Image 1: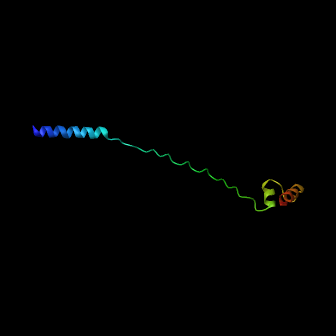
Image 2: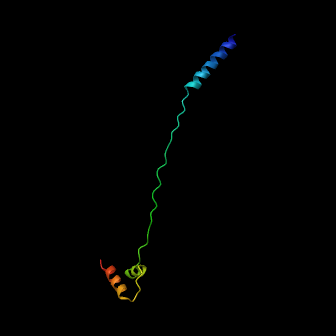
Image 3: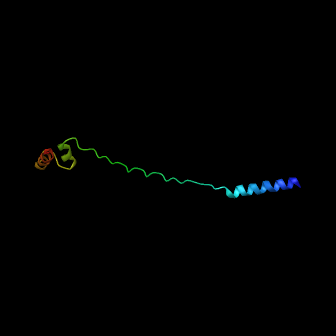
Length: 72
C-alpha cells in the first residue's frame, strides 16, 4: 500500500511538472544584405572618354568633345 501511494504521488508530481513546463523559442530575423555596389571605372583622359562615346579621333567633333571635357 505504501509503495502504491508513493507511486501515485510521484506520478502526480511528474504530471504537474510536465504541464507547467513552458518552452520559449526566440525567432531572430537576419539583417538585410547590403545592396551590391556597382563601380564603373572612369576613363583615364578626355580623349579616352570621347573615343568611348563613339567619336573618331582626328575629326572636328572629336576635337570639340576633347575640348569640352578638358575644361573644368
